[in-house]
Every structure is written in structure tokens, then in C-alpha cells.
Length: 231
Image (cartoon, rainbow, N blue to C red; front, side, top):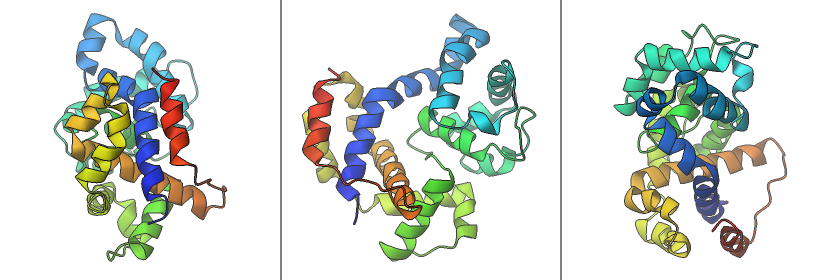
């Protein structure tokens, strides 16, 4: 499968560089808000997340909008549903946020959810959907239409199917070079989450390739060397 090994290294790289931090905050969001304030968390963490994951544009303009979106996530029961692994809530609630600039914040909700509860959720956007469509119809004997993939709950089920292409042994080998890094412990101890993060990167790579963005197939050794700069 094209990009199969590269997706593993991308997942490890992103987790150690960014996602470990966001996971720690988002999975303990109630505690963080209680200890600090929703204003501080919104400005210091949530606004950065929205920009970094290219979902700020799905919200209305205004300096207070990220706070409003975060408050809606906490007040409307969505956060609790994410903690409980209810993937269907993204399809049911994505168009009911007043802070949204258009009819849907599905991508933003999926990315927040995947960082909060990575064992159950996966990131979802236009390019990842293209990548998932290619993988299902060309790499594994599954097959799916874009209409089926557009349903987030179905997308998660398809992602689990794709994740079965990765064996624990090959993931363990990839993690071996970062096992001394405390940030990798979560991936080592939570293989289901690690597999979904890998599938996310696999879909992203195939999606970028599908739209002609010229994805490079890098030397895997370069990922290992890059990790040395993160210690």
C-alpha cells in the first residue's frame, strides 16, 4: 500500500510534536478550565488549535468567536459525548453551532474529537475524505461512495477497517526508536488510538496526492533523525 510506512512515521512525528499536548489539554478540558478559565484556555490553546488545524475559517469572524465555539462544545453536551466515544453526535450536531460561519463545523469537531479521544475518533476534512475514498476503492476490498464517506460515523467505521491493515508488530518496530520519549507512551499503550492516527495520516497523504499537491515519499530514516531534534 502506497504511503503505508510513511503514514506510521507521520503519525508518530505529529503526536510527539503537537498532538500529545492537545490531547492532554482536551481530554482534561473541564479540569483545565476550572483551574484557569475558559478565556485563558480559549486564547492560549483553542485559538492556536483552530489555526494550526485549518478550521478557524469555519467559524464566524471576531476575536471572541473561538471562546464562543469552545463554550458551545462544553455547554451543549458535545464534550461529554466525545469522552463517551459517541461518534454519531458529530453528524447530529455539526450544523447546530451558532459560532459557525456556514452550515457545518464537522471538520473542526472531528479534529477536536480526535485529539480529545483518539481511540474512537479520527480527523475528517475534504482531503482526508478523498484519501479514504481512494483507499477503500483501490487498496482494500471494501469500496464506498463519497455519500457513504460523508457520514462521519461511517467514516470512523471505514477507518477501523483500514486500520486492520496495520499489524501490532510493525507499529511496535516503528515505536521502538521513540520508546524513551514519554510522549510516545500513550501510543505504545493505546494501539487502537495509534492505528487511527496512522490511518488519518494515510488518508491525508493519499488525499494530498489525489489533488496533485506533489506528496513526497520521504526516506524513513529522516523521520528518525528528526526525532533526535525533539528530545
